[in-house]
Figure (cartoon, rainbow, N blue to C red):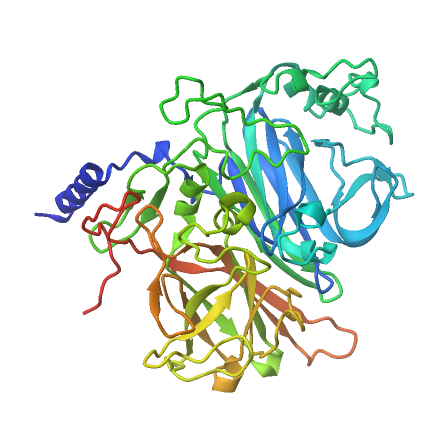
Length: 547
């Protein structure tokens, strides 16, 4: 059988035995960068850093988009609002530590969103002047979702919101007068105090009024029917983000992940065989919905390269019961790899961001109860630590087989040559060439308190690469365990990147000479021997064992 026929046979067999559907009917990460949902793996305002970002609507239609920021420990929400983009629109904003006054006149020092853009938001965040006539908006992050009655065992101060990740979810395509109201026809300078009775006096005021009640008690049209002027999703969003430190003259930029087919339509009607209920996706500002669990697609698709089939689309083995599981499936990896460099001659430093963008849907007791849902193993009680295995090499193929120093990375269990570590949060940072406890001494580049340190310098490894295994783990008793699969894949749903920083000290006094770069992680995927229904079958793909 030739290669072409063999590939066709493999795909046909997978489709017949595993119930594979076409990728157009399943959540997938679009390698071309356009999608209905954008997942940004990291933001930080620590260590003098600020984070800036953008989202672009490439389509010919206006869009309703949910913008949500999630703190890094347990992904409790720290800010969300609705964004209404005109066709071909770009919205930009930034986050940094600062003291500001919100629209109610309350001053606070917190991670703060700053907007200098005409795109409509509800509530409207662009309503202050900086004294020079430049209109902009400031909205501090809020700790209400993890403090008071909502405490989850973690810290309750606003400092917890200083790092995390964020997401943008298309709620639908806008038509009619609402689409026209989102169009940039005039400069938008609303009054400091919004009056719902005057909601039709300007473009953004109409959209604010649609979610408001007038002075006469008349509800806005979206309060009556949130689906008015909205039709099915059309995707086509892309974005960018970066962490910038002005005093250090450093910038680390990245692209978010774009998810396609997160939902097939704006809603599913009562005849839908999967959900069987009305399922609106356009929600009032102030609601925690929609979330990554709101999509009506219950199947995910990944794209692989294998020795048998160089380009294979593999869907999960049987439909999920939650939309977030299909999203998690697209991020499932059993190994994560990247490089590090900590050369002393150029003050080299490397940190890895490791984000589990859906973790709270599996470990937050408010969502799942007292027991974590696989593939995660620990419920969040201030931490939710997942044990992972580490293998570290220098650039000359020398591998660590002993024990690095430091309080975080543990000794290898008896008879096991791999090191272990714990990743305890939704967003974690790995700092190289250090034995610091990051909860006491934050990392040097990103200023993170959520993560671990790797003392590669004590091993004599100044530069090299490391691999993190996320399927097998050895517990404190030395027992080897394996995480439960998700849709036939093993490991954890993960994303992130590496940042490295260097300083040239030979250019003379007064010359800033900081250099750096950002590199996305590399991964492998691995299947299990059973699907979501526990039915054993032959693995459709495995990593090659080598010659």
